[in-house]
Image (cartoon, rainbow, N blue to C red; front, side):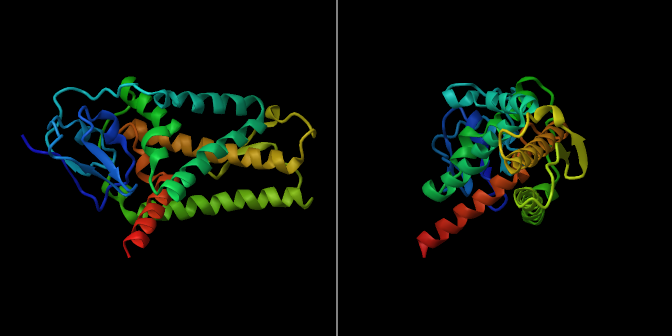
Length: 260
């Protein structure tokens, strides 16, 4: 039997391996990369199969991985379903998505780790549930270019460029230079009317404009996650998730500062 080893240089510190290790032999070091305690490693190979980046080497498990629901936060995938349902009927609920935007940053800044990604990410859990337990994923390795630094950081830059465009449109509505657009934008290109989710001017138009834009961002990223889940491993989205890439970079910078 061969002990599992991690290629730290390409690990995206998503924490997927933590969920399937039966011995608790894996931890994500300072939010940067996973490390495996050889003394605790049972050589089952479950982490090898689960890793969306395919950067863990070792023996493959004989049985299919089954992620067990043990803690309260293992059910946070319900939040994703509730979020999109509420936003479908009332766009103002799209503001709730800021929880998923701010919380990872707080973990990285205050605690210096990727605790949100490793334990609390609701969309990651949903993808794991659909692709793993329900068997909707092909469970193929993602191509190497997808977890390369060039692609991950390039996608991060592109994603935030689109995010700032959304903020600019919100500002234009706030300044009265543009009227409220009752639509969401899928994949940054396709405008879909969403007027049934807007319920009048009780709330300032710019608040609703931000909600439409943020719902677009959340829905687009979720669609990308579902597509890569179907094509590759369940949580392949974790490989290039902009928030995951950014918080890992923040953890690396913090760790470097501490060691200097």
